[in-house]
Amino acid sequence: MPLEPGKSQSGEGPSNEASRTSRGDNSEEFVRTRIRQSTPSPHRGSPAHASPPRFVSVEELMDAAKGVSNLALAHEIVVNGGFQIKATKLPQGSLERTVRDIVHKAFWDCLEAQFNEDPPVYDHAIILMGEIKEILLSFLLPGHTRLRNQINEVLDLELIKQEAENRALDIPKLANFTIRMMGTLCAPARDEEIRKLRDINEPVPLFRAIFAVLDLMKLDMANFAVSSIRPHLMQQSVEYERNKFQDFFDKQPDSLCYVTSWLEETASDLYSKDSDGASSESLCSVSVLNHAYLKLLTWDHEQRPFPETVVMDQIRFQEMKLELLQLTLLGTLLVITQNSAGPVVSALPGFTEQMKSLIRLLLEGVGTPGVSTDDVLATIGEKISVEVARCLSQHGSTPFSPEREESLKGQIRTAASPSNKIYQLIESRIESFLLSYLSTANQRSSPALPGGLGPIQKELEELAVKFARLVNYNKMVFSPYYDSILTKILNKQEAQP
Image 1 (tube, one colour):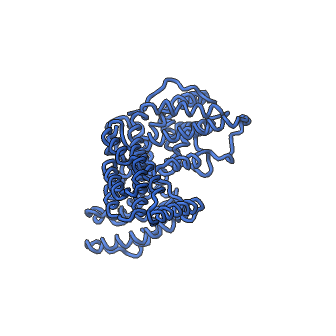
Image 2 (tube, helix red, strand yellow; image 1 turned 90 degrees about the vertical axis):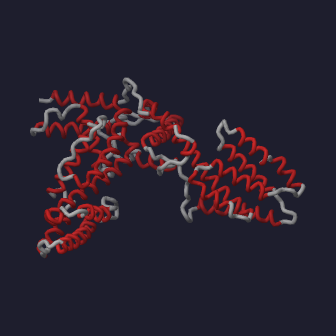
């Protein structure tokens, strides 16, 4: 069901040379890995009404794959403000790393052997100087005429060869010039690496260290380029992503079947609530879409295919799902602790923050494979009961009796149960806040914080900002598709008796 987008929309939207480095944790390999992880598995079931698959040519598949890679990279740069290219680290003991280490060692051993000959041989050294010259020139901007002339003059390979033949080549002089030029061109973050280069006297270790720092400078320059194009890319990213999405899914039948199921299910849930007395406004398209996005924060990623329009952000939604789980547990445990400690202790300066820090630390990893939530909650129960008893004793309150202590531990052990009333209340109020935040995302004021969420306000607002930013960008890109599908779904709901 490929859809033709309607009216195109544009996204929101230079850095100077000093900002060559930017924060983030992504590389091209990371993006490719994310694509592989996010792409629906061929083993996933498809709806019964799906059309039979059609065969496509190798060229079509290659074009589609290239389009998805470009789309994912552009999306990553725009959505992830901390996008950064990082060096690929080969695993210790891997075949690739072993081969690389052997080849590098052979080269540097050969270079050292040439230096140790009498008279020294500079064939490999001249090759390295040529590479250094090319790298330094690649760092220059069009206006760096003076620096370009200096590099060409000092690192003149023909002159260097003549000096080598006449035994007049001054390697330390060339190295010092290279280090000085690197210091001029590098980002401030590399000043310490440059300083360390000046302390190396042996030629082979110095060459190795120079190339290591040059590799870092190349990454800095690449990330500077990314930060420079981001504002320009954002201006065109909405239409670009929409067109790339359409190009790719034009080649597949029923290309939006998972999106349709996702929105149909959400509308059906809201319709059921509406029938039970919920607000009659709940079935407007905006509300259905916002509730659909909220459903992604509790999605069963192992068993259910992810909607096609958000598949590139599946990892982000998984991360937010984990964050939401831990935040809900944190709010639940704080309410339980405050109720058990009583108003006198709960009102003590720093008590709530102390309990919050302790619980957050112990909740790390909850919701991930290999971490038992029951074991973590049991540990939290022991720790909190000790802290509450100590505070009660210090401030002259009624001592913590064994019965109250066991009651507190029991409440904490069952805090993650879906049937736990406090957990249900905190979860419902967090979801209500996130929905309100989506509705007021374009307004200056934030929605009112529901009662009981005060201790986790900072963390909740941080999650809401990330969630709203991702959702609103996705809406801008795919709104024509959503509008078309939701119109059919809502008309069908209204037509039902």
